[in-house]
Image (cartoon, rainbow, N blue to C red; front, side):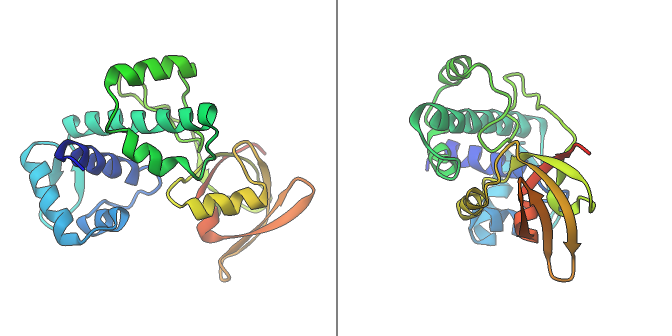
Length: 220
């Protein structure tokens, strides 16, 4: 991976880390998401700090600067538009596109991306329901909850699913859970780490990791 591609990747991961959790992004957390040694990540973060792309207090939280956020969102836009293209035009399934887009996002120009967006009809969500940043760097914002915190009795619609684990996406496929699925939370078993939901004519039991990978909008 070239230096510019590596920079884009780090900044993208820093931004996406904050999408699913309010937990501060530290070197150790970033290393875990990237699957790299903390020492290697710390050195890259130091260089990004020197370039004015991130702000990092020693042993503290890593935050994107305005310049870092601009690059991160441009990369996320490329990634999610490419994922959408792969599904809509090339027949990929939602569990197959993440790694492909990780490679392709660094190989395409801004002109290509904007023409791709136009051909796709300017979508605002990718195949996992993730918001696609606009060309001006703004991001669609909607009220969403992760399924694991939804109260018993609530009816919800699935609006987003984490794409970080292809095995989880295949598991949800087998359960028939997709974007737009309507679920009703019937019981929460916090000590057992499971949540029971009604989906269509049947009932399902989800583990907390699966429930945390699903974002929903409450509909009743």
